[in-house]
Image (cartoon, rainbow, N blue to C red; front, side, top):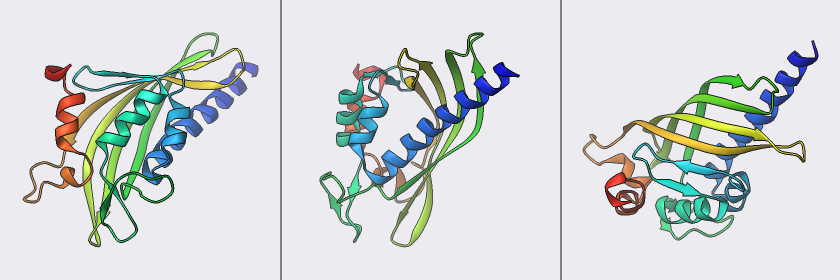
Length: 178
């Protein structure tokens, strides 16, 4: 019974981090994003590793296209812009270590963006995450591997370009540029 409660508690805390990540990206809260990756890294499907909170923050600062409330492209500014997205995380599966001190978490990501009154599907991906419980008793996201299943590049107006600065993506997220 105690182990079941520990797993339930751990799962609840890990899910809170996963959902805080989605909220941080969608609300443009780069401070929160930096905090989430305090000890962690992101590995792209092409093999590039972005290590630590400050580097993750800088990557999102450069990579994401930011909008004001009137849907004008603007430079990132705290509390003044968002990417106009919704990161939806589903199909979450947990594999805990025997001591419930770490977990491998697999989930699906779907990203929608609303511009010009149109809601569009722009990204499909799989997350492979690794979480650890530190000595302070808190759980931390240690590594997020992002495996892209599809970018909305085929539509006539290339919807992904409204979310990501493609030149930055090619320069910093693909293996051939590492």
